[in-house]
Length: 413
Image (cartoon, rainbow, N blue to C red; front, side):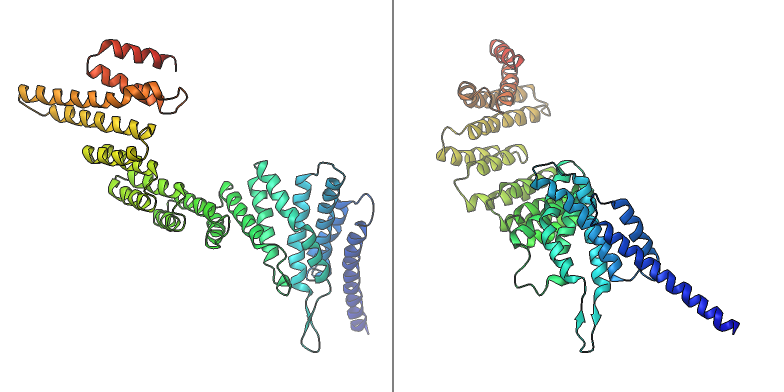
């Protein structure tokens, strides 16, 4: 008899515990209908239910927890309708709670009926809430990004993507968001992940967007290359740039970046290969011709070849300032090259002859520089470099008057 009473007492205690925790779930849910809502109390009730074994795996527990988040976020959304400033931090907290708890609620919600079909009690409301709030994940992610809260910004963009990819939306007649917007949000998620130094995640998202052939794909390739460089993954960095060059041949960023990489790593011939490919695609692109000439002259000491290349550019546009500037540099650099080599000569006569030849090169350079000084606009970014070069050339030619004149102009800049 005593044993029976003991088991009965234990059963009654267990039943009371279940009732108490379910009551907490109900209390939390009921608080959402009060005005103002006591969110702290509602969360206190629901957290107790989450921690108790009798309600921890009850879909209703997690559904109400998600509904608290929905209510918090919706309160801020309503402010916008009234032309008031929403609290982005409060909306972030609410949306994050909504996503985290609704996903868990859906996990526990499905029950298989006698026919083997899975029936859900909460899914319909969860789906409607996700659809209603989806663009707010996007908006809050953007607002937090602008506030430099990159980790929270990433969380919002990341949850946007994960919501769209939830299996509960597989049976929709059409996607809950257009693919162009979906790819854009994934790209923003990659940027926010990069800014918060979550490089692996940034690479994952950037890779997906790059392969999607969307409006953001070219930008995604740029970000992907930057992430590989940040993680010192040189092989993937180069591979990404090479793929991008093939896919976006008219985008100067990719060619310019890969050319700079090879130049920085003392591989000017590889750099010229890419420049030549671009010139073949677009023979009228003078800037690529100028870059090739600069590489030939400054990196490979192939001065005459550089000038021949520049003649092609000047045939297209005889007054192109960059081409004329590079032509002057090709002559000046050859002069420097000759004068430097002359230092190794043991014959004084041979040395003087080479120095005289170097000065002839400097005079040829000035034939391009002097007209440029007159024609070049005062705010042209090349003007300072032009005057510095001219100053050095006049010094080497011992033309004191011209040297002082150019130096005086430099002092005013």
